[in-house]
Image (cartoon, rainbow, N blue to C red; front, side, top):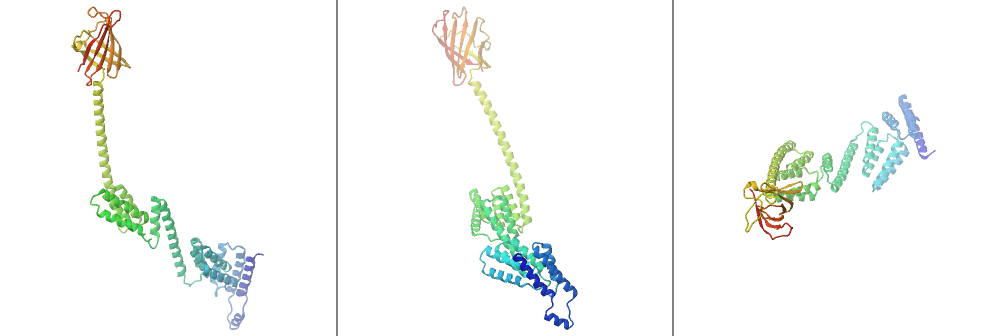
Length: 449
């Protein structure tokens, strides 16, 4: 048999003696004509039976509730066993010297042990809850408050338990708030900001605004009031408001001021986002703030439409400029290419036979699939123009064939185009029937407009 069984056995024996066996005073009362009601005796016997079962199953919450409920019907209340009182006294001493969370938890467990020995021992439940609260164990503290409220007898003042429960709520809210604030400082996301605002709103007393936040806030207000249309000062004020809200992300007034500064700077979308945070702080001007959001949305849409129109106009201007450039490039390309229609101009000592100043005798220089050709309507079939080569602004070709008026077997012509692209000027080198060069002479072609 373990120690707990021995303790419970002793308790049950004492309870049975206290509840079921009449003492001298009870004998005297009987002799005076006052006897204990049979129903009360039966209830006390039932309580003893329940305690026997509870000894075997101390985790049985239903059985514990039966014991507590039955004990509350007995008058006088069942006596508190000596072992339970001893455990309570030991817990009280432990609580008096506790200095750490573990110490407070150890005291709480001793109080819980006293309550297990006598489940109707409401003071033990309340003391356990108080010890757990000092240890920062909010869940166990709340659990023992519930046990206390269930065990306390009718007519007993429970304001202390209600005060403790409210204090637990405040402590837990404060702890959660500080944890959330640390997480926000490490990673200031919108989700973390919203969580802090909600936690601050749930607290009975709002958190104090730190001095760091107030310093940035005052700086922002001064910069905003003295900006006088200076975009640099306005943006500086916005950054200072944001810094204040990094230090105090629950500060509603700072959100309102930041939204105003962003509106002045035409940052309508940012101002809308800021006002949505402001609404979470449950301000007194909730209606006005919501209407301001609607107004900013209208301004943002108007600005977006104007910006879109401006972008479309700029895009159209760019397209027109591109077309103009393309046209100019095409003109320049045509101007500075040897491709085109040319006619021969007279040169000193010229005896080059070919084109004439009449359009019917123009030379047509063309390129087709990378191959250059030169044709001339006045050239006789006995002569051909071939071996045409073009390199940038250089043109060369060979004229072959025999003609009584042109007693040479071959003439090689090399041109260079002028800077304005309107003139081809070069030399023609004739070869005799034995294909020996017989001197050269200047040649000039002009572009037909």
